[in-house]
Image (tube, rainbow, N blue to C red; front, top):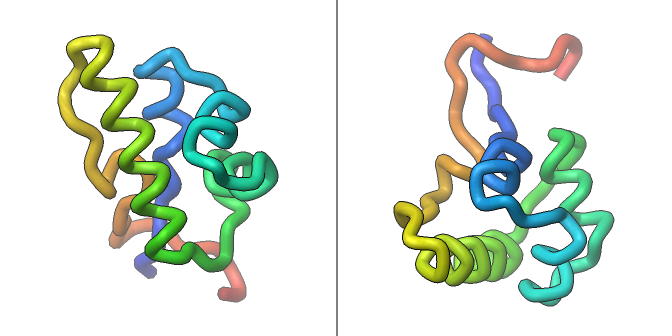
Length: 85
């Protein structure tokens, strides 16, 4: 079955940015960032997603890294789905 794979943690590692720094700079609750990073999120507001992308892209540009896309935060995975969901 298909599902959503959370890829934010890998992106944070690649950019060498902490969850806390992202939360502070993007003005998002730290728990929201943590839940996204560990794949515990059940729902994601577009405004939150945009704030995260804006901040990650700011950091990526500063460091000469490639642009961050939605797939660097969440991705559709046709082979992954939590049991019972």
